[in-house]
Length: 589
View 1 (cartoon, helix red, strand yellow):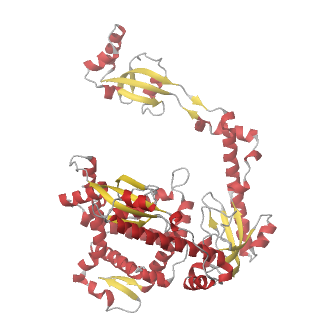
View 2 (cartoon, helix red, strand yellow; view 1 turned 180 degrees about the vertical axis):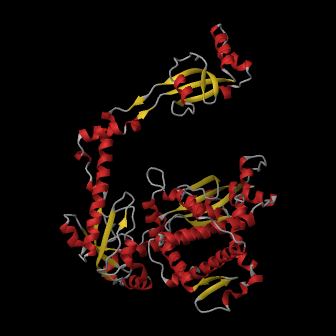
View 3 (cartoon, rainbow, N blue to C red; view 1 turned 60 degrees about the vertical axis):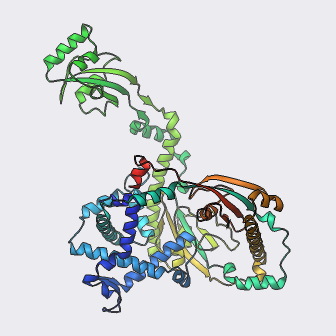
């Protein structure tokens, strides 16, 4: 079932399925997608409806995800330009088609199976590597889910995946497709090129006032001041409330004794054993060893292979039979035991190399223990303080008054935008990291009580919106230096683009070396470029352009920034032959 998603073609087919699967349900009602139902329904597949509210919620969540990725809000017109509404509806229709399929086939997943999938997800594991409910709740809350909605969504997603993978399973990849994918991965190209940077743009005089004003008027949105919020923060963190030096040596030493097993690496031994059906045969073999027969000879006589004889280097606790373990860990190196009858029969044992037990002394781990104890105590203090703060908030007390009453520090942030910057553009320092409190802060109103945000280390952040400064258009006088800097960068980029086009035109009748020499520039070359490969001289965007240019063809491309361009000629194209027996070929299949 999972085979299809393990190959590029399977994944491609699954993508097509999600795009086209709604069509396959035409026979039972997909024609009603855009007609034949009430105004509260956005689309309908069979008996599965997508409500306007579901679409609105999914669309808003997609907008928020995109905004978090780009670090700024996405306006409605920008979303429409990206075709986001249509994409979202298309995805929801495909998902509804799979949900309808699951409903018709009466497919389902038990609560136990969903719980197992969630608790085994690495995303929700804490520092100890186990499922952490606090982390789980924080992550799904930050994603806009409560537990019930998240579990229901996971149930639907799992069923959709199972159906889609079943449809796409068992695909045979055509040889032509294998060759195409191999070429895409491994094709190599070489180029001769000339690099242009800002030095080749020449002297750029300051813009005339009229030109600068016109430039600014056409780009006012780029210099618009974002919305700022004035916040009060009350932060409880284990790092802030704990000082490991406050833990006494007596407490640390007691913890060392209580947790001693954590600081002990147990003895390990190389153990070999030969099993016998009864004690008599084991005794006879032991006597033969005493007369000069080797342990290996006894094993060979009984047809026992080395792999079956060697238990490896093990700890005593790792051996399943405690009687055999006691005997093995009482033997001297190289000695053979007398017959030992354990839970699974009678054996002769021999011990090889012994790795002695290692104990980390208290002095070596004292500071580590003190930090752990301090963190544990801090978490207990945080729990107590959390209760007190919430009690005060329940009584309607402002955050600043609560902090003063409980002798807790409060941080006043005079102005911060959604990306965490102040009005000067500098990153606001001294605020909690690894936790998103700005999103809910910008969704809140002035003076409204908000739920605290839990931090990954077990702390909390309470916030209160004290004031807001709306987004506004800045006048040219306020941002003139930034506008001039932006104008200059654009002018450099424009000059380099023109110069690159001129050089590329000359390359049609001359070599790269000749053109570079005439222009006073350096001719360079790069060999063995692959799709996705990058270097300082040949950025990814240039590599992409190289791979759409034919052999001996000429091109020019912007590099990793507008003020860096590369003019090139493709000098060689090679594709190594695909070995059908290679690991890569198997992976492609």
